[in-house]
Length: 153
Image (cartoon, rainbow, N blue to C red; front, top):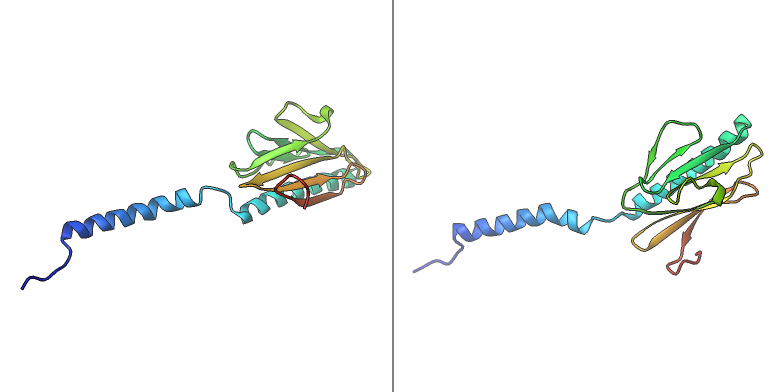
Protein backbone atom coordinates (compact mmCIF):
# COMPACT_ATOMS: atom_id res chain seq x y z
CA UNK A 1 0.00 0.00 0.00
CA UNK A 2 1.19 3.42 -0.88
CA UNK A 3 0.54 6.37 1.51
CA UNK A 4 -0.39 9.71 0.13
CA UNK A 5 1.33 12.90 1.31
CA UNK A 6 3.36 15.89 0.25
CA UNK A 7 6.91 15.79 -0.93
CA UNK A 8 9.56 17.87 0.77
CA UNK A 9 9.78 20.06 -2.34
CA UNK A 10 6.05 20.86 -2.24
CA UNK A 11 6.22 21.79 1.45
CA UNK A 12 9.24 24.05 0.82
CA UNK A 13 7.47 25.86 -2.05
CA UNK A 14 4.42 26.53 0.14
CA UNK A 15 6.61 27.84 2.98
CA UNK A 16 8.44 30.18 0.61
CA UNK A 17 5.14 31.53 -0.73
CA UNK A 18 3.86 32.12 2.81
CA UNK A 19 7.10 33.88 3.79
CA UNK A 20 6.91 36.18 0.74
CA UNK A 21 3.26 36.97 1.42
CA UNK A 22 4.08 37.73 5.06
CA UNK A 23 6.81 40.22 4.13
CA UNK A 24 5.14 41.86 1.12
CA UNK A 25 1.50 42.05 2.18
CA UNK A 26 1.88 44.78 4.84
CA UNK A 27 3.76 46.99 2.38
CA UNK A 28 1.09 46.58 -0.27
CA UNK A 29 -2.03 46.56 1.91
CA UNK A 30 -1.03 49.34 4.31
CA UNK A 31 0.84 51.74 2.05
CA UNK A 32 -1.63 54.55 2.73
CA UNK A 33 -2.24 56.72 5.75
CA UNK A 34 -4.43 55.34 8.52
CA UNK A 35 -7.29 57.36 9.93
CA UNK A 36 -5.46 57.76 13.23
CA UNK A 37 -2.33 59.09 11.47
CA UNK A 38 -4.45 61.51 9.45
CA UNK A 39 -6.25 62.84 12.53
CA UNK A 40 -2.94 63.09 14.41
CA UNK A 41 -1.40 65.20 11.65
CA UNK A 42 -4.50 67.42 11.48
CA UNK A 43 -4.35 67.97 15.24
CA UNK A 44 -0.64 68.81 14.98
CA UNK A 45 -1.40 71.58 12.46
CA UNK A 46 -4.26 72.92 14.61
CA UNK A 47 -2.05 72.84 17.72
CA UNK A 48 0.69 74.72 15.87
CA UNK A 49 -1.79 77.39 14.82
CA UNK A 50 -3.14 77.72 18.36
CA UNK A 51 0.41 77.97 19.70
CA UNK A 52 1.20 80.76 17.23
CA UNK A 53 -1.95 82.64 18.35
CA UNK A 54 -1.14 82.17 22.05
CA UNK A 55 2.43 83.37 21.46
CA UNK A 56 1.19 86.51 19.70
CA UNK A 57 -1.18 87.32 22.55
CA UNK A 58 1.19 86.51 25.43
CA UNK A 59 4.29 88.19 23.98
CA UNK A 60 2.29 91.07 22.50
CA UNK A 61 3.87 90.75 19.08
CA UNK A 62 3.06 89.15 15.77
CA UNK A 63 3.56 85.39 15.46
CA UNK A 64 2.95 83.00 12.59
CA UNK A 65 2.89 79.44 11.37
CA UNK A 66 5.02 78.85 8.27
CA UNK A 67 3.94 75.89 6.15
CA UNK A 68 6.06 74.29 3.42
CA UNK A 69 3.82 72.12 1.23
CA UNK A 70 6.64 70.40 -0.67
CA UNK A 71 8.47 69.09 2.39
CA UNK A 72 5.23 68.68 4.42
CA UNK A 73 6.62 70.57 7.40
CA UNK A 74 5.79 73.64 9.45
CA UNK A 75 7.40 75.90 12.04
CA UNK A 76 5.73 78.08 14.65
CA UNK A 77 6.90 81.63 15.25
CA UNK A 78 10.62 81.98 15.86
CA UNK A 79 10.86 78.40 17.10
CA UNK A 80 13.64 76.41 15.45
CA UNK A 81 11.80 73.11 15.80
CA UNK A 82 10.45 71.77 12.51
CA UNK A 83 7.22 69.77 12.70
CA UNK A 84 7.02 67.06 10.03
CA UNK A 85 3.76 65.79 8.57
CA UNK A 86 3.29 62.41 6.92
CA UNK A 87 4.78 62.45 3.40
CA UNK A 88 1.73 60.72 1.92
CA UNK A 89 -0.71 63.44 2.95
CA UNK A 90 -2.26 65.89 0.54
CA UNK A 91 -1.75 69.32 2.18
CA UNK A 92 -3.08 72.64 0.85
CA UNK A 93 -2.72 76.16 2.23
CA UNK A 94 -5.19 78.98 1.69
CA UNK A 95 -3.98 82.34 2.99
CA UNK A 96 -3.68 85.94 1.85
CA UNK A 97 -1.59 86.60 -1.25
CA UNK A 98 0.74 88.84 0.78
CA UNK A 99 1.63 85.91 3.05
CA UNK A 100 2.72 83.54 0.29
CA UNK A 101 6.48 83.28 -0.15
CA UNK A 102 5.94 81.04 -3.18
CA UNK A 103 3.14 78.84 -4.48
CA UNK A 104 4.25 76.10 -2.07
CA UNK A 105 5.31 78.08 1.05
CA UNK A 106 3.23 80.51 3.06
CA UNK A 107 2.26 81.90 6.45
CA UNK A 108 -0.81 82.25 8.60
CA UNK A 109 -0.19 85.24 10.86
CA UNK A 110 -1.58 86.11 14.28
CA UNK A 111 -1.55 89.56 15.85
CA UNK A 112 -1.23 90.66 19.52
CA UNK A 113 -4.99 91.19 19.86
CA UNK A 114 -5.60 87.54 18.86
CA UNK A 115 -6.84 88.31 15.36
CA UNK A 116 -5.30 86.79 12.26
CA UNK A 117 -4.90 87.20 8.54
CA UNK A 118 -7.18 84.14 8.38
CA UNK A 119 -6.77 81.09 6.28
CA UNK A 120 -7.25 77.38 5.93
CA UNK A 121 -5.00 74.34 5.86
CA UNK A 122 -6.56 71.29 4.21
CA UNK A 123 -5.08 67.91 5.10
CA UNK A 124 -6.28 64.75 3.41
CA UNK A 125 -5.55 61.20 2.38
CA UNK A 126 -7.51 58.49 0.63
CA UNK A 127 -10.50 60.68 -0.16
CA UNK A 128 -10.87 61.85 3.46
CA UNK A 129 -10.12 65.53 4.10
CA UNK A 130 -9.99 67.77 7.13
CA UNK A 131 -10.02 71.56 7.07
CA UNK A 132 -8.21 73.52 9.76
CA UNK A 133 -9.80 76.97 9.60
CA UNK A 134 -8.50 80.19 11.16
CA UNK A 135 -11.05 82.95 11.68
CA UNK A 136 -9.52 86.27 10.66
CA UNK A 137 -11.40 88.33 13.26
CA UNK A 138 -10.88 86.21 16.37
CA UNK A 139 -7.98 83.97 15.32
CA UNK A 140 -10.03 81.01 16.56
CA UNK A 141 -8.82 77.67 15.11
CA UNK A 142 -11.36 74.96 14.24
CA UNK A 143 -11.14 71.53 12.64
CA UNK A 144 -13.87 70.39 10.26
CA UNK A 145 -14.13 67.15 8.34
CA UNK A 146 -14.78 67.96 4.70
CA UNK A 147 -17.44 65.98 2.86
CA UNK A 148 -16.39 63.89 -0.14
CA UNK A 149 -17.79 66.46 -2.59
CA UNK A 150 -15.72 69.26 -1.06
CA UNK A 151 -18.50 70.77 1.04
CA UNK A 152 -18.17 70.85 4.79
CA UNK A 153 -19.80 68.12 6.79
